[in-house]
Image (tube, rainbow, N blue to C red; front, side, top):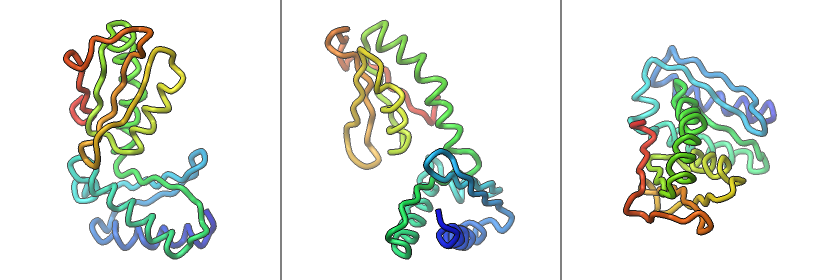
Length: 171
C-alpha cells in the first residue's frame, strides 16, 4: 500500500469511525499479503452490527472509495473492529477441525456451516482443501449462503438427514 493510499484509507476511516466514536483507535498493519485494519471502539454494535453486517458495509464502502480513486492499486485489506473477525477466525481454526474430524471423517456426516462471511468461507475452504476424504462446497446466495463439509464417496456419507448445523455466532 503506497503512502497516498494509506493516507486515503486513514482519512475515510476517520470520517466514518470517528464520526460514530470519536475515541476509537485505528491501526493499520501488514499481515502477510494484505493489510489488517484494527479498530478499537466503545460503540461496538454501532460499528459491527449483530452479525458483522455493519463492519462488512464499512469495509465494502472503503474498498469502493479506494479503488475509485486509485484504480491501479491492488492492496488488499481487512477491517476488524473490537477483534470481531479475529475471534471468529480463531473459532474456525481452533474448533472446526475437531468437529470435522469427529463428524465428517469418523461418522460420515455432513457439517453445514451457517452465518459465515465470504472471507470466513474462504478460510474454511483453505483449511480443509488438502484433507483426503473431505469435500467443501458453498451453496445458496447472499445472506443465506452456507458451506457444506462432506465426506467424499470413498468414505461414505450418512446424507443430509443427519447433518450437523454449526452457526459460528452461537458456538
